[in-house]
Amino acid sequence: MNYILYYFFVFLLGGQGYCTLEMLWRGRTHYSMFFAGGIILMILFYISAEMKKTPLFKKCLLGAVIITAVEFIFGIIFNILLNMNVWNYENVPFNILGQICLPYSILWLGLCFILFKWVIKDKFILKSQA
Image 1 (cartoon, rainbow, N blue to C red):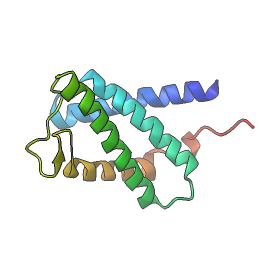
Image 2 (cartoon, one colour):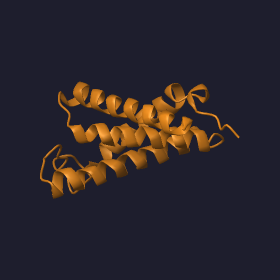
Image 3 (tube, rainbow, N blue to C red):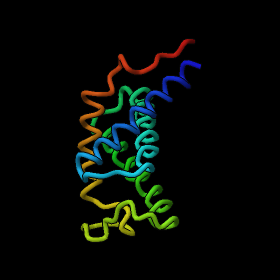
Image 4 (cartoon, rainbow, N blue to C red):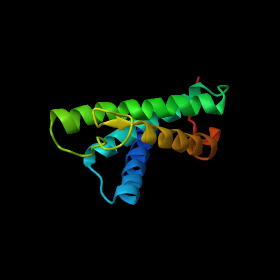
């Protein structure tokens, strides 16, 4: 039960964090980004807990790939299938279907560095009860 509450809290924190970043960066957000941010932060916390001995750069690279993948999946669902036009990267270099692009993936790498280096610390990782 502790893990459910723990990851629920992490989900809420990630959702709020992602929406806050979007409001600061773009001046607007969308409810779908709350869910994307929640999923992403839960995965990043899991990576931090399970890959303690993995070098920081490798964790950051994996985190950036995961954030980009989640953004791509949400883009396909909300922008293409549901035609909600939440974002469009068509004018950004090295984009795929206007949903993800290399410059933002590099920004996600930097965000992961900040998260893994200074935010997601061992004292915040739920320890096993066993």
